Image (cartoon, rainbow, N blue to C red):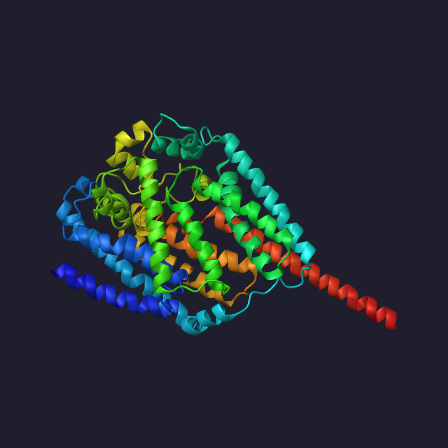
Length: 462
């Protein structure tokens, strides 16, 4: 009963602080911070943490705990700590930056879409056409270097396990992983959003045609390995794009309709990909899609807390980005992979086990203990809120809006994926450098063109 009371108090306090930091938690106007609250914390972490603390989870991962009663409580208090400290840090950042979330987010929604400053239509189109050709080449490279494309195997029929094919496609990729992850899997969907926004802004057929080609490529890279979540997140990003430019207005009826369609598609994917046909699996709170949402993401946090410092030694930075560990000739390891290998070694042996991703503080703990949880929570909260403030204050053009929507979905996903990605994420760094550099280059080109035009006019008049 005490756990329930603590859970309710934490829920109310956390909700109020998240609403202040976000400006609104309305489902009709989602934003980066509200998605973090609903998806990363409430749905993926906090509900499941209470069930585990109460011993009501009956979940296969939690059965692997030793001294379960002790670590059920430790895990619950760690998640409750994050639920309070994370939004509190965001509120402090907002106050220090003079950020009025409600007013600034509302103003951003009402602001019209604008073109890139200083650039001509042809310059912009050919620049993004070149990037699009690069992403198509990366997709071809990904297909070439992947042993078996799971979606092709599904369409043509195969006797192999689709789950095993998924792991093989990910872990046995024979090419450069950064080329695949950045230029194919990440860049293609992002370019499709940019092309869509330019098509809406200019109404030019060339942008519409480019968008169609990029859309096909984006759908492929989101379903090629039969992972269930990427295509859903891609669709969510499209909805956000349309909400932010005023093309879509959500209502309770629309939300119910879209949710029903999404649930039906998800059930279909479970049936086709994983062969699940038992109806009780879909209705059970600890199995199937529901169990995947409320327990599968948070249960590994309890395993991390239980294993590291007990059965496994602390990593002391070994799971930091490989670019950092390589400087000290230290082998890079991810805590989520170590936990999978320790708890479910049979899955590693038969090729169906990957990693047990979970709330970011688990990896912080695996490296630096409880100090890592405190510092990691503060650091990630500050980074998240600064990104939110920064994007709301940038010009609302197709490039920056697409990046804003990309981070609005991928920050929440990364929060339940790991901690070290917030220290150095090559994909994020390259995207910001690439599109920031492109915006700067186009701006300089426009300024130089204006300067030469002014100088020529002065010369002619003289």
